Image (cartoon, rainbow over all chains, first blue to last red; front, side):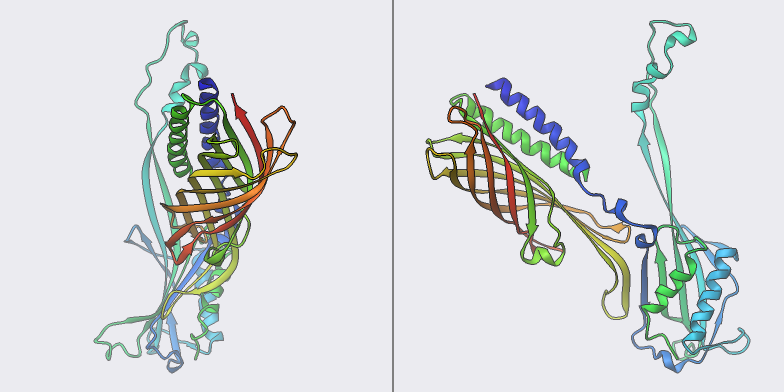
Amino acid sequence: MNRTIIRLTVGALLGITLLGSCKKDPLNNLTNDESRIYVTNYDTTAVFSSYSTFSIADSVAVIQDNQFAGRQKNGFDSLAINAVTQLMQQRGYQKVGTKDNPELAIGISRIYNTSTGVFSYGDYWDYYGGYWDPYYWGYPGYGYYDPFAIGVYSIQTGALEIDLLDLKNATANGNKLKAIWTGMARGEQVFNTANVSNEVTALFEQSAYLKK
Amino acid sequence: MKSFIQRYGVIAFLLLAVGTAAQAQYHNDLQFNVNYNVNIPSGSFRNFITNPAYKGFTAGLAYPITSQLRVGLSLGYNDYYQKYPRRVYSEGAGSDISAVVSNSVQQLPLLATVDYTLLKKGFIRPYVGAGAGVNFVSFDQYLGEFDNPQSSAHFAVRGEAGILIPLSSYSGTAIRIGGSYNYAPYNRNGIRNLDNWGIHAGVSIPIR
């Protein structure tokens, strides 16, 4: 009886251990496109139809772990600037230069955040004798002292950020440039040039109020 | 998720083993039940997931009080998952999120059970049962690839009915088929409960 119970319990414990693999992992069931999210926020007091002109920065700000890392203009950046310009014009706004008193300013940023952690790879050393038998070094029958083995990993995530600033009412806003609309795209391959048009379009499509 | 299952699952089965070992000192006619389950969300649970959980099982031990009445312990596992097409969700005034939402819920109910077989003999023996205990829940909602996993424990009650089909008149082994309703209060993330209907098929094996 007791042996049977022990067998059942051991079997059940093994079953429970295997249960983790019974879970359907949502991440394995997402395409890169499905992995991305698009977040927009706007000032509910802003009257978007009251603006006529906009100016857009000719480069993109790169922000690395909350630090400004400079302005760049690679292939992705150019496509993003063009896509935003095109969609703003389709919404009835006129593009002008920064010296032509634009009523709206558009800045685009690439934001990178890095998270780090440590992991142990002691299991690797547990079987070291299997990979490199001490015989190979001329010490048959010897063993290994396992080292204290840890590793460090680093994961970087990115986001595309588009900010629409109110220049028209800067003075009335207490001499501050107020962001009246922001759009952010995050997820897999967010900085892939093949995706930039869809990303910018998605942000504008969920912002129907953003029009002249 | 593995850590959730392993942590609570191991605790649950150790409780099961300890309780059973204590009983086994005095009786030798325990019944081991193992079932494959399909569970279908009901109530407000369906606001989040409507897909049935095809990955489910229940395992338990039942000790005879009389020839028709058994009490025991049962542990179950169900994995619910549903992905919704991309749509825009309003997050309050002026804030919108476009995302593919995936909801993933795992339930691990550990219940004290009582079963009553309506007929002592016969090729088909109907039974009714009930259980009450703790429901360990892992709830994870993904917006795209970004999630917010939460684990918690709640009260749970199960009522079930079904039939036992003995394999022979000499064997205590029987096929077990039935259905159940699982009342599982939750009250988090806007969900009042994780109630579900279940159907199961399995086997009861005597432990001698």
